[in-house]
Image 1 (cartoon, helix red, strand yellow):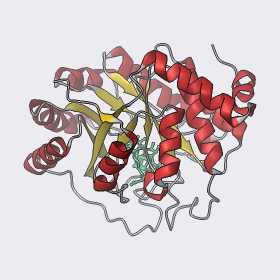
Image 2: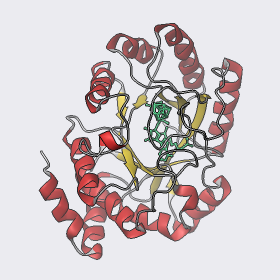
Image 3: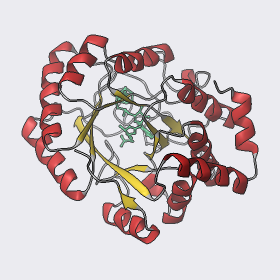
Length: 312
Ligand code: SAM
Ligand code: DTB
Ligand code: SF4
């Protein structure tokens, strides 16, 4: 079990020592020059009742995002097929819901079946869910469920008030109990302290088993949200966070998630050296533009990093 004090000690080391350790652990558990590519699709845009202070899809903030209906099967299939041709191995569908309603479960199950039949790994992120719902989705072929803790337990109330940390942990337990792989991470650069970042990583690393997939999002400040004017995190502190996460979560796929579009090639390369071995790949994240896909492929080539192949 990790403690915040231990993690603070990891953070406080000289940058070269920390990176050396992270690389050593990375090499023990993964072929280091490989990258897993996940493409995102927003299947239900906007109109969300929650108050996540960072989110462009929360109905209560004036972000210019209009609520839309759930996408139809044909559109989803077409987008997944394009993602596969472009080289993604995982397709992640997101919906701006507080929680999953029973009436939407069969619809989602069909979408999962369609995506799975293309030979892609499947992932969804649709808010809170029950154990029964998780079991139906597992049966439909769901490989991963993304549900983030977002912050340390202490900082959480500054970011979200409409659902509790405990609610999130419960959903994650339902996912685990149904035999679905867990994708769980958080956001940095929301004005939190290093101790908060350490606290978030402690929660992630103390899950037993640890999440198979860990997205590290850098806040994208969205106009109209309470976090719109948040100062950016120091780049080296971001790389340190990746390195510390790699040390604490040796077997997890660590994903450079939101925020990559505003990172230089060199900063991304440092993150890969620190242990990040997955990216979101494709035109968009959920609402915002993602890093350019052609540049991503060129960057991986320049660094001699291979894309992970589809195992299915
Ligand atoms: N509504 C579902 C939920 O909250 O569980 C699923 C979608 S939600 C948008 C998925 C995750 O995206 C959030 O938990 C958060 O970590 C991340 N995210 C959303 N907006 C972001 C932003 N502006 N910057 C960085 N990460 C963001
Ligand atoms: C995650 O941790 N990050 C992704 C994915 N899981 C769903 C979403 C990032 C969203 C960034 C802001 C937006 O485009 O809405
Ligand atoms: Fe809704 Fe998810 Fe955005 Fe929170 S992060 S407001 S739950 S869409």
